[in-house]
Length: 263
Ligand code: KIV
Image (cartoon, rainbow, N blue to C red):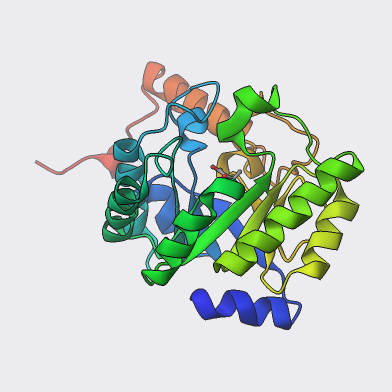
């Protein structure tokens, strides 16, 4: 997939699949699948580093994740997620971060919100760098939103998200994430936009879906939002494998002759 495919897939009504990825090993795995594109999300702060929010993700941490993913992702389209405040310190600083992310191996960047970010988005787009938007539940604003809550539930809030989505499209974004908004609102926004929408907790009518890799593989059983479908009981499978290894070490059932070098 390349940047032109986002437009083509929206036009052809072909759904876009995206997963998060933070490391080289997972990137190699995803590169062998038919998943369309990879988001190196700032959710790394929570999923990989164990924080309660995405706020502790830094430019340095995200750059390292992007580099690791890019070394394993082969031909996949990679979107690097601009972390908390990294695009709110003026255009020069914003472009320094964008430069780092693109040099680390991103093919596009993503940032949260619209409104005051529009000028920065236009500048990034005019610099030849594709920008993905992110509306609805924007986790970097968790303190202003009062928690991880569904957004756009009343008319005024829904109209605001629609207007923001149109402003992202006008600013040149090639797609936007819609996170945790009611399904009819996501459908309406998707119908109103030329660019594709990628939903998470936004129902089935968006142009595509994104899930956190560890969530969809059932590797984080403590985290089960309503919108999540798990495709594997990864946590239990891996736990069982580790316990089996432990048992075999204790019983001297591993290693066997076939695992030994001849003298
Ligand atoms: O960081 C992330 O994983 C994201 C997705 C939830 C869209 O922004």
